[in-house]
Amino acid sequence: MNTMDQAQIKKTRNLITLVSIVIPLAVAILFKVKIPNVDLSFLPPFYAIINGITAITLVAALIMIKKKNMNMHRKLIRFSLLLSLIFLVCYVAYHMTSDPTTYGGSMAGIYYFILISHIGLSLVVVPLVLFTYLFAWQGNYEKHKKWTKISWPIWFYVAITGVIVYLMISPYYK
Image 1 (cartoon, rainbow, N blue to C red):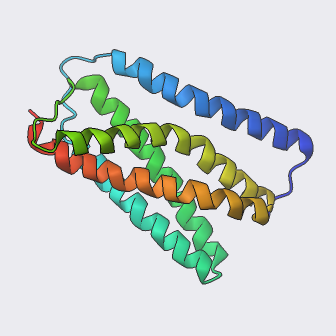
Image 2 (image 1 turned 45 degrees about the vertical axis):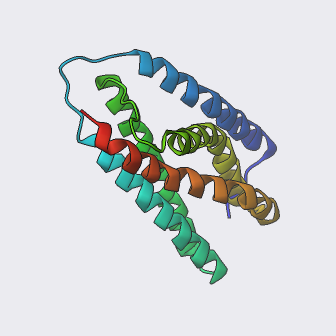
């Protein structure tokens, strides 16, 4: 448990808010940037695997906390955060170097529902996860548990649907 004074808590909350705004704005801006003659076509399966590992790691973290193994839970959550950051970097890099891929299958309605819910919830999950983490960092486990009941399922859904979106769109990559 780390102790933070009120000034540190306020700074951290402001930083989380800033990061939660800057990430989607930066992603949107970087999607407009196209870097020619760079082939990062190997990244989509890689970041789908990262999403899958994130989902597995989140389940393992849940199991560890149910077993009261806080140390392993903490390590798994930190690893999940790292994986999510690696995913974000790879995702943006790929989209800065590649043209968009259009889904062409017969399950377009399902695909776009999953894709839109995945994108929408990926915007929401950043502040939810960071604030949930902050509460644990502060030792406010009661608030951490309350927020986890919302943030964990959304984070898990975003990780799982990232894999599903990849599996559905991958036949249409050029």
